[in-house]
Length: 303
Image (tube, rainbow, N blue to C red; front, side):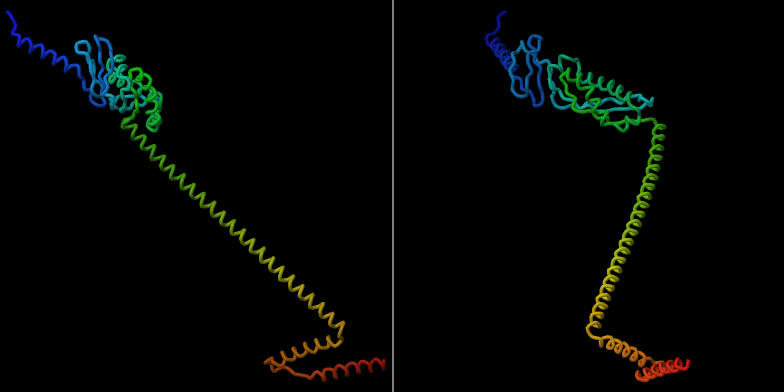
């Protein structure tokens, strides 16, 4: 049986076209192809147009190098103080070495998921309940460090880990709510006491400041009074010195001053509204004084 040359040519051309088409591999952006040649790793095809040898080369697997999100299933975990809690989380990862991700582990996603669960149980088992609830950032950092080295051997980088939910038993939650309420009340009492203490301190400081200011005012008033008295004394001294100097130079100065004082006294007496007064001229008072002296002189002669 002979084959029609035309049919044979069509078959040959079809095979050539198929083989030629298989030589071209267009890799999408953010993806890579692992190529094996005769069952052995050959190379990694990056995004874009690539060429392979048909029949000899084979694309083993297609991988994404974008950051992936891996959910950690909710699981029961016992804390250091023997409290049974439920925890789940999210792991963010990205393939940085496709060859290691394919040949060093069967399924890197499943491997990291199992490793994350066991590591999470170990980390929480070393913490008390209060530390677990209040130290999520610290727990996330510890999990990332613990998963980092094993994942790196699989060609995967752990970018971050987030503990999304921590659930505690209902009775524990009620006890925690009561404890928080007591803490809030205690904190309110402490704040009120602190406020009252600060108010008393400020009041005492204000009273002290007031006393200091009053003492300073009294001291300044005393200084002013002292200065006034010194000034008056100096003025009086200067006046007396001037008077003594005038008397030493002119004997009529004393009579002038006495006459001046008498005139002032007479003016005050004359301006007084009282009716029980007698105004005696100055000459009569001198005469009375002379008579008194003459009477005393005669009395002494008889004796």
